[in-house]
Amino acid sequence: MEQTRVISSRLSIEGETDKPAFADAVKAQQSLVFSIAYHILHNAALAEETAQDVFFRLYQDYHMIKSTAHLIHWLRRTTTHRCLDILRHSERHSQISLDDIDIHLLSEQPDQDPILGQTLRRLVAELPAGARAVVVLRFQEDLEPREIAQLLDLPVNTVKSRLQRALIVLRSKLASLEESHHESHRG
Amino acid sequence: MNHIEDDLKTALRRKPAPPGFAAKVFERIESEDLNKKIPWSFLESLASWAFRKESLVFASAVMLILSVVMHSAENQSALANSMARLKVIIDVSARMNRASSMDCSVLKPEAGGENSYYRVRWSAGGVTRVDREAADGVQQTLWISNTTVPPDPVWQPSMEFLTPAILARHVEGQYGLMQAGQRDAAERGEFLLIGRENQQTIEIAVDERTYLPKTIRKYSPDSGTDQARNCVLEVRFLWNRPTPEGLLIPQTAAGRH
Image 1: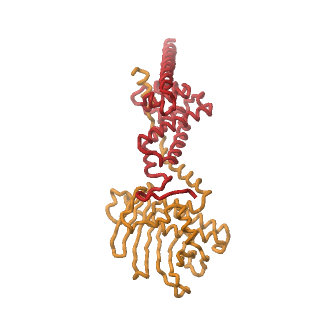
Image 2 (image 1 turned 180 degrees about the vertical axis):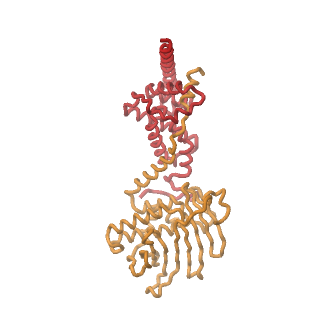
């Protein structure tokens, strides 16, 4: 029988999840978790499944969450590591499928050329998994390299160099795409 | 920040989760919770029902019902065969799990017919409203959630039912089903389960159609024959009565309904 204990000052059970609080956390943070998963995995269905996994794990560990900041840190860390595990154990990182992009996801960028947004997301998805995670955490979550290093258990310099290399690659690929686009118009 | 970094920030902005995502998470958790508990003892799942419903005031009554049902189901003489026993366990548990409200009148004949009345309404969001009308006519409403501290002892649940481990000890130590109910002792459309607690005989009538408990009666230890039995407590239940809209929202539920 599971060992549980009544806490006298508060009707909560050690090891039992505070379900209303957990429900609030899911509703408030679902976008964060889904977006990290989506931008790293570049597959809406897989991202949704991964996000569900993350929240299920959160449910099991929720009694250990101490604050909202702790919750967000936990979610970013767990989601990113989960995505990297998935990429490590599958061939998905070498497959780029534009079919995976949901229409409702594409309609959320009112202030950006939708073609540019799609192109950038596709180019990010072509980056090596580690670099991809760094780029997503840097530009989606607006984290500093020091914070990313903590989340990914990497030295700060490694994060910085991955970021710099990723930006060089992205600039280069974007430039060549633009060039080929202009050439096709000239031709 | 240069151009591509701005573009990346826009391209990689957070997206809304797919429609219905949160509901799917909750469904999966409920499902996994149930699956996780299946190999555990039946007591575990019964106790978890009490936690889910936050039915603090009625935990003892409900657990009493279920523990006796369980004991009766474990007794070969209680029901005709193992399939029937299994059906009782599954049906009673499932019906109570799906209950949205429980009305309960408590009559104590020995205390001059003192009668109190409780109405419990459970919301899907985990908030429970309990209305109580005491024998002296005083009405009170209590909202219960995970962090509720009962305001006075009248609301206090029996603490021995609050954890599966304690409940198991309590049931094993005090609730021994002595005999199955005789069909002719039960009213038409119900089956009767008979147990004992602290030398008192307890009879629980379960509706054969709904598999929900209808009454609990406790008899004093010195009760002898059926004709001369001394009932010290009678609890009558009504389940799943309609709940007026808005009643389960604390801000709008101003009065007693």
